[in-house]
Every structure is written in C-alpha cells, then in structure tokens.
Length: 324
Image (cartoon, rainbow, N blue to C red; front, side, top):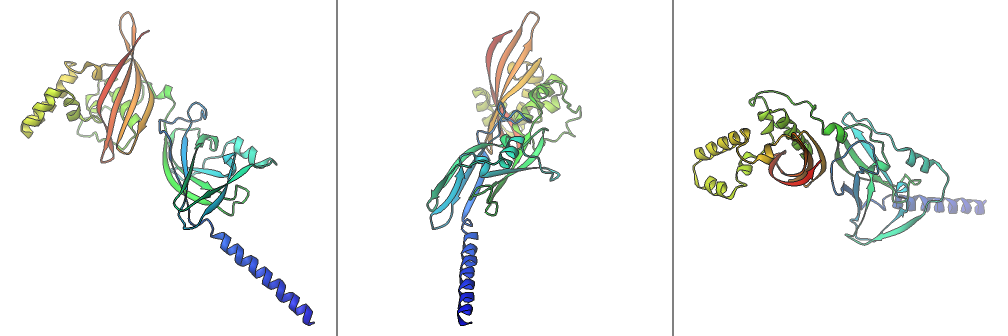
C-alpha cells in the first residue's frame, strides 16, 4: 500500500513538472516582436501575383535579454499567415496554392534561427501568394508568425497592421472616362487619396478642362517658384503681391502661355510606377499626345509631397520617348 502511494506521488510530481515546464514554454516567445511594412512600395492592382506582386518586408526581433530561438520553414507558407480584411471586416480567402500545401502530407524543411538581444531577422514575401485579391478596394493587412511552424499554431505572434489600397487595373486607370465632378471651386475639397490617384485625377481634369479640379491637388506656389527668377521675385514682394503672382500664374497656365508641358492635354496616359515615403513621392506616367500626322510619347515624373494628410504635385520633369 505504501509503495502504491509513493508511486502515485511520483507520477503526480512528474505530471506537475511537465505542466510547469509547459507553462514556461508558453511564454518563451513573449519578447519576440514581428513587424511588417511594404517593400519597394508601388501601385497595386488586383490579381497578377507575378507581374504585380505586393512585397511585404517582415522583421522578427528579439526584445528579451536571452537568446531567442525559433524555427523558420524554407517554404515560408509554413511559418507565416497573412490576414487581409475589407473595411467591413470581411476576411479575404487564401490562395489555392497555400491551401493545397497545408493539406498535403509532406516533409517541411526548416532551420533554427538564433537571435541575440536586440537582433533582427528579416525576409520578404509576396502577399498575393497567400491571399486572393480580386477587387480594387481598401484593405487592412496583418501577419501571424508561427515560431514553431504552422502545425504548432499554439505558438503565434501577431504583427502590426497595414492599410492596403488596391487600384483598378491600368486599363481602367488610364481611361479618360473616369468620373470627375464638374463643380465649383467653393465646393471642391481635396481628399486624403494616394499619390497616384492625385496625379490621375489631375490629368483627367486637364483632359476635361476642369480647371478647379486641375488645381485642387497642385501646389501652385511651388510650381511658380520652379523658375529661379520668379522665386527671387516672390520672396521679395508683399503678401498681396504674392497672391497676385499666383493668380496670374494660374491664368497663364490656363491660357497655355507658360509651362506648356504641364498643361498639355494627353490623348491617353498610363501610370507606370508610384513610390513614396510618409512625406515625399514620385509618380511616373507615360502620356501620348495626338498631332495631325503623328502620335508623340512622353514620360512624366510628377513629384508629390504630403501636407496635413493631402498629397500635392509640386514639381515635374518630362522626357521625350519619340513618336509612333
């Protein structure tokens, strides 16, 4: 009887030690942080994972005072999950590829990563390899990282959340039939839209000769001061004279008396590339101009910057690409 009692006590002690050890393990990734940001951010369209990827830069950091060890699969789909939601909190579905991989019996190859205090490990993944993005819209993106691989989902670390704007396809974006409201300047208010949308709306407004809309996202003062002479004069006159100079500059643009490249009306255009930081950016656009006997092709680079949440065009450059 005594022996049986000792056996029970021993089993309970071992079981208790296992529970205690597991309790410690539950917290071994508490000091791991996972952050995401866009890598080489550009303009994103639906689908086309290969030709128009959404690259996300993923960083894993050790915030503890001890060495952090975790597993990282060679195929990152066994280490990461992307969650993408619409503004109505509807979750987008995963790609068939990731579902097939995770439901097929296979060997998952991985390596163990060790990070000392303050060290980071980073890699880049294409969001479209994980999630089906079929429609242009605004989405919210987050990442779940599995330090013990996907099958051990009990251990997971959540990242920060990003907003993602997916634009209509380029053919739609370059159409001159996109809606532009013909309203008075008093009713027009700039919106917090992306740099490529700012340029797109400005070009379409010019195509339709909607001058109020055309100047809506333009830093007219900065455009005026692109000329060194105008810049010197602007800095030396009174506030009333500056206002008059801006008014005259806008009138000259409307009459095509100056800066003909910025007010030229393209027959068609296509936004090629958009890159920007929090405050500065560039939008590269190919534009075609129709003449009686030929069609001219030019590359425009619009410089934009953000002020109080609103992006504005403040400079540009033009390169002739020949005729067609």
